[in-house]
Length: 336
Image (cartoon, rainbow, N blue to C red; front, side):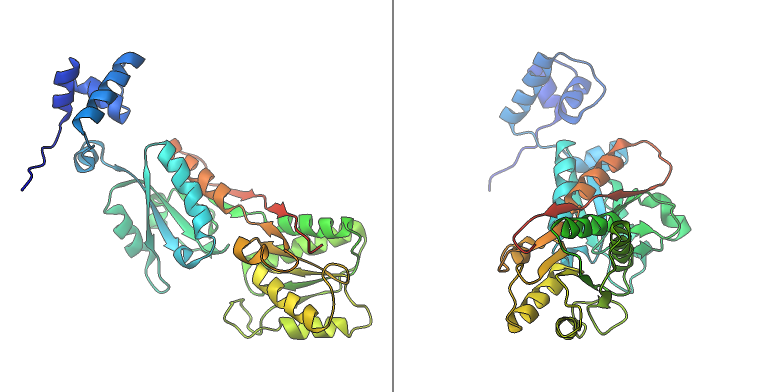
């Protein structure tokens, strides 16, 4: 059996001819002052000896480990999880930190999940949701969460980062109008915050341009949108095509709805965008880029939210809780 010998800070200090405090400062970002040459020398010796930071011991000294915990409200099952996690992880790595997530299942007490996260002694904790919604955090737990990602704390007691749903809708409608489209229908996502706010932006942009909407239609039969609910998309498209004022553009609540619109228009023998333009929200790249023609859509700012959340968590400065909206990004493809 090969015996693994743990290299200590004292071993490195002895080899480098400096104090243990200086070694700790070079390797762990402590307060010890030293020249760049000394810092590089210490890091070189540590690498040569195979030193690995003892995170448990460091956690005992500091009271926290170089970790950021994420309470994941359905995020792991979301196609956008990758973008939020990439934003978090990239900013964390730059600060010498790591990210871990614990899932918050429906019906599970948020306090129990936070306790599970905090037992790992993270430096900070974020709460991230798979879609834009309000989250009720008990008063006694408000101080345990540093930032909300893609959701908002119901009473505004925690800084929250959310997509600018109204602004995104205004931008895509203005884009359709600039392309010469004037008869625009909206097949929206009922019963969720994103749908409500996007509908406001939709109407605002049309009112601003002096154009009347052809209507807003729910994508599913249920009062709250779910991609598993019975779809109404095909019937809405058929009714619009047989109305006295056929649309020249259809805005869709998400890329899945847009895919159904594509299929309905194809069955009717119509061409996108020559007969009817189609635009959407989300930018699920594997879907939007593979539709024929590729779909023009508004990309959610998930990676930007992840990056900004990590910056807030690592800043270590107390801030007044606030709601910050981040802009969508228009992805122009061939459907408009």
